[in-house]
Image (cartoon, rainbow, N blue to C red; front, top):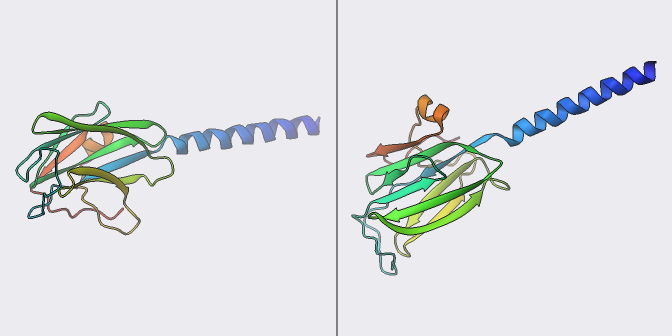
Length: 159
């Protein structure tokens, strides 16, 4: 009988460990979007964008955010386990879309615009590195909605 009890206990512990690992994989991440730089060169930009353009960024089916030279945004509560779709419009016209995963990256990413080439890039925010995340409100983090931060000066938390 003691061998059977040991087997039951070991099976129970194994199932708890597996369940804990599944919860960790279902963690959440965020994508901070920097505002459009001012005073930059736009020489090779064939995207039709100008410094005065308004970009609309949407991740998955979350509320889109407007990004300009005076406004940045952040998407929170993004699943670390799944694939995400980013859609970008410039001045209400489709510009580009792409998919990304958090797998193999951190849980804190930065989406930024290079005006010279007219391209968007997604990169990791390294520990201790400052990002452009506006201070996300608790309600934003709970609902997984996007936040717009007009006049944000690209200074945010360091996590």
